[in-house]
Image (tube, rainbow, N blue to C red):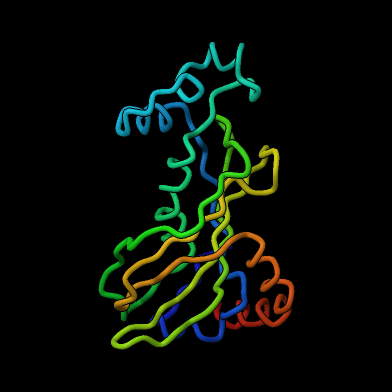
Length: 185
C-alpha cells in the first residue's frame, strides 16, 4: 500500500477510524541485530550467538531485541504517512503501552499496519493518535509488537494504541476507509 500523502495534519480528519497504511516488508538481518546489540550493550546470546541459539533457544535461531523492533517504528511511520506541510518536527515524548507478543527471528520479514484512531485539537497543535502493530510472515502470533508512543503535540504526531483497539476501530469503518483511500490516490 503506498503511503498516505496529505497536505497537513488537519487533512487527516477524514481518515479517523481507518487503516491508513501497510508498509513495505523489512528483513531482520543478523547484521542489524548485531549492530543494535553493540550500540545498546545488550549482547545476550539469544540475539547474537547463532550456534548457541540453534542448540538452546526454543526459537531455533537468534531473535531481534524487542527494543530493536520498537525502534523501527520511526522507519515504518515515515513509510506510512507523508505530510506536504504543516508539521515542523517530530519529537519522541514517551511510551505508554508496549508489548512484544511474538519474537522476531533473524532473517524474517516484518512490516507495520498503521491506523488513525483519533484527532484532537490542542492549543497551538493537533494531536493525531495512531495505532501501530508489526506483523511478520513467520511470527508465532499475529503481531510482533504493539506499542503506544507519544510526542509533544506541537504540530507533531502522537502514536498511541494497541492492536486490539485498532482491530475494533478498523472493522467498523473498513468500507468507508477504502473509499476514502481510493479518492486520495
